[in-house]
Length: 139
Image 1 (cartoon, rainbow, N blue to C red):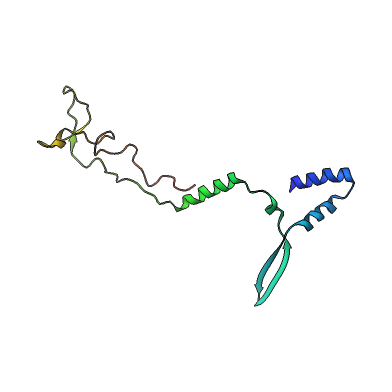
Image 2: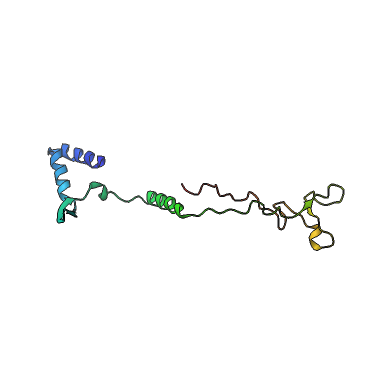
């Protein structure tokens, strides 16, 4: 709106016409919209000029920002079980055995007995930075 007033000022200074006259012409040139309502059972209908804000171009960056942030309100919180990866008994073998000091499952005579446990790099271990339900889900 201010841009249009500035343009009207520049054009009126060169032609010598009134600013109000230019703004009135702009108001008359705007599209008319119908408003319908009901008051005490009587139908009310009238025409008014479309507000000037609807003549401005749509900004795609604002539309994209609003759309992505509104769509976040439909998300549902999720998380992994807090004890996941720590449901087996495991101890470190210590130093001197030429293996990593990651805890290993304490089961005799099975293929699982030499597997690491608890670490995020181990099979059936916990994940790195387990997901939490108190994450910031909405913006």
